[in-house]
Image (cartoon, rainbow, N blue to C red; front, side, top):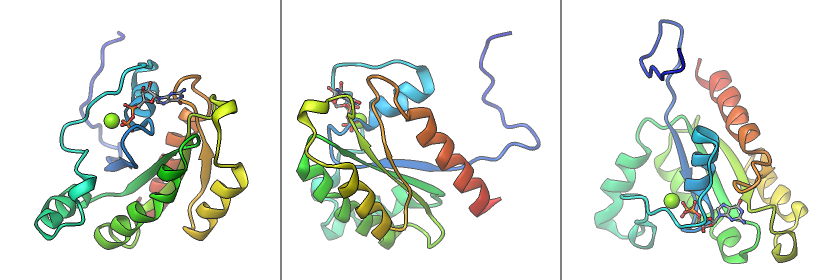
Length: 164
Ligand code: GDP
Ligand code: MG
């Protein structure tokens, strides 16, 4: 009847999926695009997620640990037009390795592929990094929807294979 019912049915699977990466890379818009098929030009502030700057400090370990607890999958996002966000993927991966379980499913995503003139990270660079992380690689655009559904479908399939 067109209304949502979020209750789990008998054969449904429930996975915890994290979307991580530097502020501004498009994490919120990727989720918005996938879940709601919408996009916003504005930065969406996400309470409790922008604690990366302090995440290395000892007293934040508890929060980081709680954030990762029980996680089945992690999408690590960087911005194809921002080299620093690409370089920081290694820092995010360190958290995943330290706090995520050994079976956590990973996907590396280079977002904002629509900004062709501004691109600074090549496909080969992204794919090369993903290969070293033993993760698949996809380039997405939350603005134009390119590969967004593919990213979530890839995660879902890989989590199902790993945990079901
Ligand atoms: P988050 O901090 O990682 O959650 O990033 P947001 O989803 O809030 O997006 C940050 C900014 O980047 C916003 O101004 C978005 O409109 C913009 N943005 C996000 N995804 C894309 C994309 O695929 N293409 C373009 N051109 N802009 C994007
Ligand atoms: Mg956000």
